[in-house]
Image 1 (cartoon, rainbow, N blue to C red):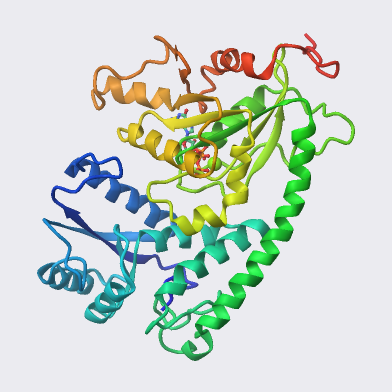
Image 2 (image 1 turned 60 degrees about the vertical axis):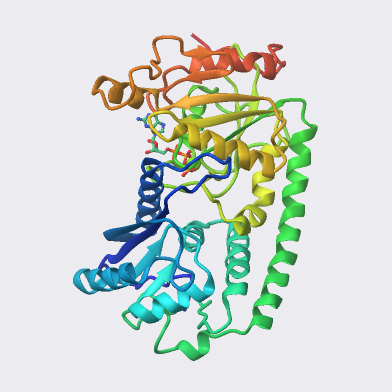
Amino acid sequence: MSKMINLRNTDEQQKALLAGLFVTGQRDEAGRPVTREAYDRQMQELEELTKACGLTVAGLCIQSAPEITQRTLIGSGKVDEIKLMIEETDADIVIFNETLSPMQVRNLEKEWDTEVLDRTGIILQIFSRRARTREARLQVESARLKYMLPRLSGMRVGLSRQGGGSGRLSNKGAGEEQLELDRRHIEHRIAELDRQLKAVGREREAQRSQRLNENICKVALVGYTNAGKSSLMNALLSRSAPSSRKKGSRSAAPGGREVYTEDMVFATLDTTVRRIQIWPHAPFLLSDTVGFISQLPHELVSAFHSTLEEAALADLLLLVVDCSDPDYPHHLEVAAQTLKEIGAGEIPMITVLNKADLAEELHEEGVVPRNWPCIRRDPILGDRIYLSAKKKEGLDDLLLLLDPYIGTEMPDYAVPPQS
Ligand SMILES: Nc1nc2c(ncn2[C@@H]2O[C@H](COP(=O)(O)OP(=O)(O)OP(=O)(O)O)[C@@H](O)[C@H]2O)c(=O)[nH]1
Ligand SMILES: [Mg+2]
């Protein structure tokens, strides 16, 4: 099966077709009508997710219909159309924007003799490829198995990381037997993973309580994936005095100070905490963690609960959003909803409208509406600030906004820069 694709170990890029069903007259979680433009942006996001998985997008097929077809989600005419597209493009996989029922996946795979995955499946796949730390790996495996469990009946299941070799994306064919695991086996594995996660969680808890005991403001970067959270952390780090941590403090993660950034969804999966100390502002602890996305699979939210909890324990949230993205108001809503889910809905928050440089460029090209923000004009609007993490513009204004939270009293170990 695998609902977790096993990418071939080859230089050849594998091809995906993207499919979606735009149900006319549909409403979002807030009860507002979903426009075709908004739906097309969802499909663009699916394209980003597909690329982040190392796949090439070979084509796109969206059906517009008043209702779904139970058997295959899309209507039979579209099923035939996509079958032709698969033949023409030699696609290895079809990825749906909508969540598919196990029955729909089975029916479509039978029709097309090609692997079929949904949005949740592709997000889980990205997470499993990116997870680096032990905790992230455990969290992702647990989420994958929980996603698979209700989809087992009649499915061929590949849980092995090896797989492949058959020239297909899935584990169908040779070696299939050894890749089949039954429900009980999976349930045992989930229980074992959850036990290990609890143990790792206790270690994290010990580090965290040490930080919480420190008399220093804890600020958490949160927001939609690819908004520039890690870039903002690096921009602040570049202004921060070299670590002058108190003896015995373990608040900053070991290793290099800079964090990884990339123009790609889910570049960050783990939490990093750094001490930021920029004269003459008081020092504070800044954490950077996994980003949010529309329809973040709930298996992942629960598996990543302890990672996301970092935000729930902060004194202040910096909600970072890419304001050059026309869909940014929606990203803000998703972030607010996710924060509520993880118990961080009541924490004081500053909204950072990042990539103001890009928004301005687009504005000048006439791409975005005329009333879009301008970093040089009104950079601060209440608890909102426009800045550019990449160009390191607007950081002083941000620090001014932070002052009331981080305190202005200089601790004795804070030293002014030497001129
Ligand atoms: N033009 C412009 N690009 C930016 C800015 N800030 C970040 N970027 C770019 O946006 C991309 C994503 O940045 P990250 O800092 O990795 O974003 P993130 O929010 O940490 O993303 P995830 O970890 O994937 O959730 C990178 O290519 C950055 O260089 C900015 O102010 N202006
Ligand atoms: Mg990041």
